[in-house]
Length: 586
Image (cartoon, rainbow, N blue to C red; front, side, top):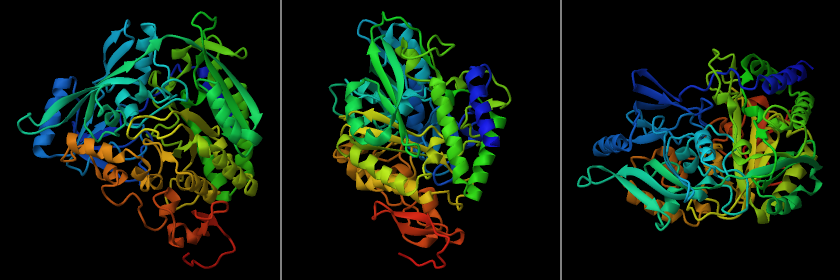
């Protein structure tokens, strides 16, 4: 009951505080001596393997010319380089240079709008520009980037590198890289070329399909030109339905609504459908979507919620988790998840507003400093929201079967997925097939899971096995494609083999950066150039560093053993068994 009361207070605070105060996240790069002797992390303050990434120094270019000089210096000395963005929202080690002698190039100061051509509806920006600023600048010129991720605290270069997207199967689809018409990339070069050069790509260059989604291994994205559209409005309504026909309904729904998505609450057997379509700019309405989980949050309440979560995990209190989950999802639904009809109050559906006011949010970044009294919930300085993020895409041809397999697991363990509903369930978004070599290979539904992570890597979670089985069903039974900027290590097992144009991408990579200056051990492993994506050690399966094959990969001392899946028998998961008294290998 105490957690329920605190959860209500948290949501009340989020709704009515309206972003007046907060402490925006700190820079992910920290140095002990000026800009030298540095570490870099992600927005959550921890990588999947909990390692510390070090670098000899961080550089902050302010112009493309400075950027070229910095890359040339590193290239001449054969020093590893990785790019860091303002808030570093990629979960894997994409920003980690190879070894402590490596260099970080931050794009924090390469954050300008270069040109807006209203007639051609094209906009050129630097790679470090935040999505928020891109959206606002386009709107001021009567233009819109129709599809974007829902969180605006990411840079243009960063979101392109990881294939970030919104939700749509219409037109060019929901991935931002589909709207790229040209790019400028600074890469290493030969001695004769001065050790670095700027490569300019446009729509006539086949190599643009490598550069649009590259997770940073080709060089530094200096500038990007995007094809925009005239500003338009959207009309949005949320509708709750039983999930009995979700698998079949997903295919129809994505084709009927341009910006539709679905929040799925499997333990409650419900789904919240976002009916979201383009309407005329002349239609009345000044709606705003200020998504509640992206608003400033009182850190004291987050701390209390985390303490209760940890207690529920320790005492295996599934009932408590499910009661809280229903309260959270019910309250968010009542509050329309942050929608207002006029920027202040929600008075009912449909909500109509300009695209720039409806597509993306993140007001916790815009607020005044208040000494961490309120924060973006995931702020790494306090680590009060400590989570795993799992995201993979299932082809439309397989989505019904995947959803039905998840439902079978819920029937076996009805309370198992309440942990997902504490974070408003599973977010389902649509992404169209892409010509990008590392883009989606088919039209897909992207399934996004956010759930509890223990501060102790050797402490298993309640219903550990169910989420592990869902992960393996999606990735291996149905060949799901992992989101490049999220996920645990096992998601990337032999992943390059799932991309028919993977060889073409590697060919471009070798052409642009033959020394591998912009590669690190992690990117080499993901691209199949090295072994080691899976880290086999005691407890590795608890963190998704491996798929268990022995009991020691789980937590046998805490009665978690490596067992076959309940629905997908080929899966190997860490299952609780308080009757087992052996640690036999499979």
